[in-house]
Length: 193
Image (tube, rainbow, N blue to C red; front, side):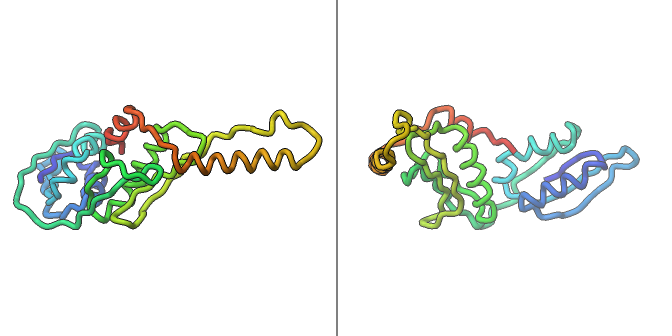
């Protein structure tokens, strides 16, 4: 891959290429024009994801790239499954490099946490590789004040209502289902940073 960019953006682009598992090859300066050609070998999966957008933002729109496929190499890839309330959601599963699995899973869970509405029970969101959980977020439950109409008097009545609510939440968590809105899927597909 050849990257043509202004000299003042070389550091940012080298950092971006290193984050994307790039292998540095060479640097060429284009005379006194203040432009540089960086040559890197990058996995195509890293280029496809959002490399061009990051290149344009890092170089203030003055950078450009040219790439060609030079061959195939084995990669250390894993499938990251997303679990919502203990149930695997196949539509959210992704294949990523093992080095980036935890960070990508965590970002996806944070976006999902913003999009799914709160329920009467806690909803665990998990990213897993095989049977191993690598990231977790929790959507807190909506609090309903069952003791609002109990003022003063005996404390045992309040405790009884709270225990009854606790049992109801346990039962609801076992049988309750979580609807993931269409907007959540669309928000997750947006690359972000």
